[in-house]
Length: 114
Image 1 (cartoon, helix red, strand yellow):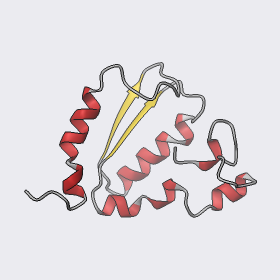
Image 2: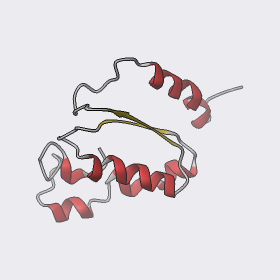
Image 3: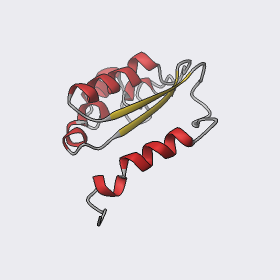
């Protein structure tokens, strides 16, 4: 979720925000804080169902994907055709495992001693 105003139909996103304007102005909105991740080349994996009604794709996934690519961040996208918001998984976890292995999170965080 990257848009606080579209969480499960709750326009405040459950963050104690009372209006759409407050949500738009909230400085903790993940979409507005991607630069440090992209600058550090932290890879993102986005998995979404193209029938998700809780977090509409055009308001959530698409802006995140477009912005992260625009600022040079590495991002991989997996679309679950016909998938809704739940379950939060894939039938086969292999693409996720492959992403994690390829991304080498320890290396991204400076923890890899190799």
